[in-house]
Amino acid sequence: MRKKIVAGNWKMNLEYAEGVSLFSEIVNMVRDERNGDQLAVICAPFIHLNSLVQLGTDVVGIGAQNCHQKESGAYTGEISAKMIKSVGCGYVIIGHSERRQYFAETDELLAEKTNIALANGLVPLFCIGETLDERNNGSYFEVLKTQLEKGLFGLSAEDFAKVVIAYEPVWAIGTGLTATAEQAQEVHAFIRKEIAAKYDEAIADGTTILYGGSCNPKNAAELFAQPDIDGGLIGGASLKSRDFVDIVKTFNA
Ligand code: PEP
Image (cartoon, rainbow, N blue to C red; front, side):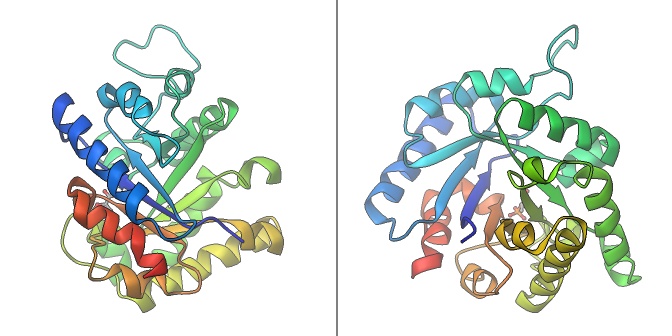
């Protein structure tokens, strides 16, 4: 059985005390209310990671939102996968569309980041997704296939099996527009088919594929009920403890 995961992405939000407070609320609510084996993860800005790990990785996993592609060195202002691992994090988001768009991160660079994350024992939450134009002009399967091939399909089967994929249509991120359950399921099934073609059916079956894009407590149940949707990557709604935990609980509601 593949893992069911609901991961929050706080993006560039929350001062130190606000992060501690929100995370404490989330941990307590998940501890009291969790009703299944779904996994909650919070991906926070770097300044929060060390203190969040002290507050409860047994209940909620902790991840970063980016890492540098090199092991260490003269890269002023950057953070390595090894550093992220050293504070006790288990996850790192790689290839979020905001990093692709605003920081010009290419598929080739993201392949390097994925390699270094895996080499340091972090689970990459690897994001792919098409723009609105690409959806409207019908090229989205090609776009997603290229992102998979260049970003992930250079991995050995053993390494690929450790990766979590997040399908995040760019037009749905932070816009209030959500892919319909049918649209999301269509793409998730496509991703799984591509994985089976590249690796094998067992690896495809075992890969956790999350949906992200304006997911909230109201639409999560229908999305997560789809056979190829194994959870969500949640932006805005992860900044509200009640909403985030309600999404986590959707699996066994
Ligand atoms: C995201 O940033 O990964 C995301 C899905 O954001 P939102 O839920 O706010 O659309």
